Image (cartoon, rainbow, N blue to C red; front, side, top):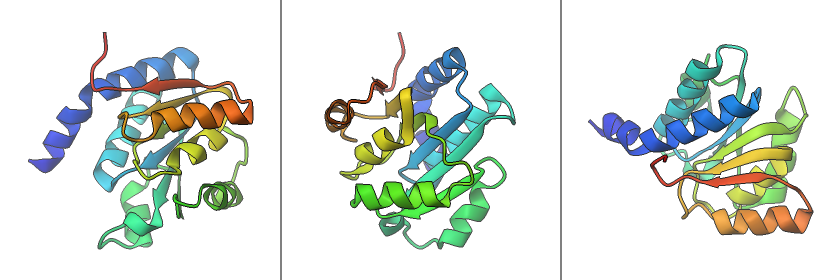
Length: 168
């Protein structure tokens, strides 16, 4: 029942993300995960709408893993999520450097979906996305306003979406 409620809660966000990703033909997407289930739901939605050719990476906060190990989470994500990085999101510059060093392809992401509400996750999202890329914030509490300030201070042009659970 919890998983179903999670999917229903995110349904409007799925539609908004799906439409934007398809319109812009995004090929590389990072999900800054809040939890295992929601991260997998977004990853599966992206795979369903874009096919197997989309490259999905997950960035998880290593201080928020709960009782699961990094190995267990990585195994649960395969084959939908190609690369999983575990970092301390409260240290955004170190987290960004760690993610880039762990990636097989260091190019910036076409889109980043921020499911996490840890301060610093918005900085990591903005640093990971390419110039003129897309950053999705699944709720206003995951630092949407701070993400706008970070993008502006970096002089980076990004399209930011504050998803609110419904689409017009």
